[in-house]
Image (cartoon, rainbow, N blue to C red; front, side, top):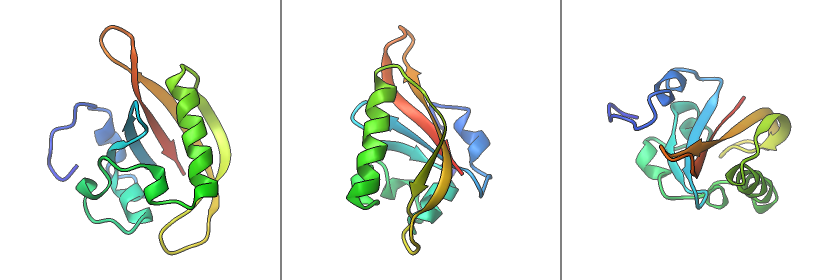
Length: 119
């Protein structure tokens, strides 16, 4: 977050965790926020490099397809809980992670995005 105020205060909890990747996406599966661990996974220096982009910009299609499918399920109101899945990085082959995703709702209860972790 590089000192910027986040609209999701809980996101600050994930900033210093180097072994947990955390992100927030909008209703079109575009990144709005990512913590340092996720940025490092993709060899990025600043959250501005990921904002507005999707998993297809960083992962091979066979991985991005699954991430996108899960995001669409979460946008429909479901959760992903402790899914064991392959997650790739910029300079290494995919490895097994445990992923969780939840829907984000506005003040009226409408789902407006997703948040997730993987480790």
